[in-house]
Length: 371
Image (cartoon, rainbow, N blue to C red; front, side, top):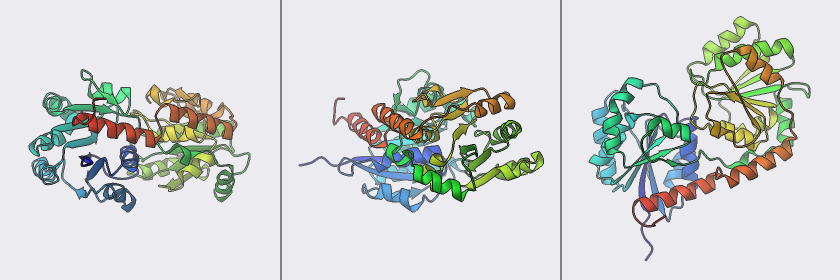
C-alpha cells in the first residue's frame, strides 16, 4: 500500500499578492505531487483563484487568518487549531525575521513535529521585535531554510540552513521576438527607444524614487530613453508626483501590475533593480531567462548573478547609476536567453527541480527517506 502524502501547512506572513514571497510559494506549490504531499495554505488575505487552485489540487485547503500583528494571541490559537485539525506534520512558514516565532509557537501547540522557518530577505522592518524574539524563535524552529546565503546568514547566523532557490518556470520567460515587436508597438516604443524596465511593489525597499532621479540624469544623455515601471503600492503616487516635479512624466510609464511579464521582459532593453536590500529577487532570475541585461543595486545578493547578464552598481550616486544604464552591454537576445535558461536549469533554478527537492526534503524530515 502506498504511503499517505506528507501533510504540510505553508504559512504566508506577508500579503498573498504580486510579491516575491508569494511568487516563490506559488512556484513551489505548482510542482508538488499530490501523491506525495498534501499542502494547505494559511494567508492573511484571500489569495487569487489560481493560487488557491495550486493548493487545492493537492487535497489541501486555504485558510485566511488575519490579525497576526494586531492580535497575536488569537492568531496563534487559530493557527494551532488548524494544525491540530488538519493533522499537520510539517509547518513551513515564510517570512524574514524572528517574528516567525509566532508561527513556530502555534505549530508546536498544534503538535507539528517539524517546524520550518524560511527566510526570504536579508533584513527586516521590525528590528526591535526581531532582536527580542531571536532566542525563543531558535528554540522552537526545528529546521531552517532560506532563499539565498544572504537571507540565511541574516536570520540563521549560527544554525545549519537549507538553501532552496527562488526558482521560476524558466521556459515561460524565454525571449520572444514577436512578443517584443507587438508590445513595443503597443507601448509606443520605436527601434531607437532605450526601454528601461523595473518590476516591483512601490515601497521603500525597491527604491523607485532613486531610480526616477537616476533616469532623469540618463535623459540628459539619451533623450529617447523610456522608463517602464511595472507594479503598484503605497509609494506609487509619490513617485508619480516626483516625475511631474522633474518634468520627465512623458518619458515614464506607470504600468501597474501586469500579467504579461514575459512579454515585458522581451520588450525591454535593460532591467534594473535599485533595491536597498533583497534576498534573491525572482525578477532578476526571470530577466536573465529572457536574455535581458540587468543593472542592479550593490545591495542585492551576489547570488542573483546566475549569468554574466547581471551587473552591480552602487546606489549612493544617481549620476553613476545613470552612466551604467547608458553603457549597457548589447546582447543577442535569443542566444543569451537560451544560454541563461540552460545555465539556470543546471543550477537548480527551474521550479520543477526546486519542487522535487522540496518534496524530498519534507520526506527526509519526517523520516521517510535518509537523504
